[in-house]
Image 1 (spheres, helix red, strand yellow):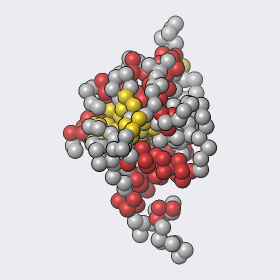
Image 2: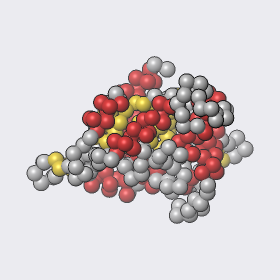
Image 3: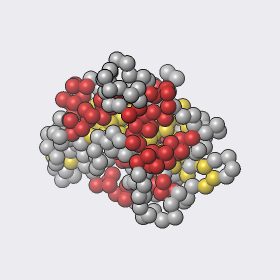
Amino acid sequence: MSENCNQNCAECSLNCAQRKNTRTDFLEKPHKLSKIKKVIGIVSGKGGVGKSLVTAMLATAMNRRGHHSAVLDADVTGPSIPKVFGITDKARGNESGLYPVKSRKGIDIMSINLLLENDTDPIIWRGPIIANVVKQFWTDVIWRDVDFMFIDMPPGTGDVPLTVFQSIAVDGIIIVTSPQELVSMIVSKAVNMAEMMNIPIIGLVENMSYFKCPDNGKEYKIFGDSHIEEITQKHDIKLLAKLPIDPKIAEACDKGDIESLDGDWFDETAKILEGMLKRN
């Protein structure tokens, strides 16, 4: 413990022996009408690695396997989940609370863009206000009979990830990364934060791992050689999937038709998540 310790573990980055368990100190209960079995956070140390894509694909994969999926879009300043699912309806509520909007296949979704009059209206708020909005998505939204809630978090280790980890009973996180060498350091930051907050790490997903040429069938590493195996060995965590650079994926996102995208990239991850559900 530092000689200058003020006993405020929530704002401290040191992992000392006297550190208090801030998760139990600050946990918020979901809405009294909500029922959520498992909460999975999708995180990244930097932006632009496809975190929202992975979130949408995981929610879709579990929905196809007969589980009721939900997505809480915690990336308030850069919400993309409604676009990926092709949602244009606005969220509605009553005296009981706010209700998520359902996708075409029945996935429950809540995002700031479902509350704005125009999708292009910017969110010019300071961090604590944004973090409080995310907390309200947990406490004020009625999430009915959800098997898996996936939280699409903004990149980094700032206010929103800290609020989610402290306020919501997260059962585990999946870290999304890309092949560049500098990502090793960034992933380490995300791993270290999760360990400090006592959040289990389910595994890593590498996006933009390779491009498979349709003309000759060869795989090309557009962003250079992958360092994912080194990262998984260093931190003793599982590699869940390697996603290709595929025009079909980009097209599905642009059209808001992610639920119709075919692919078996997350079959093994789905089995791991189902195992978590059975152990409940």
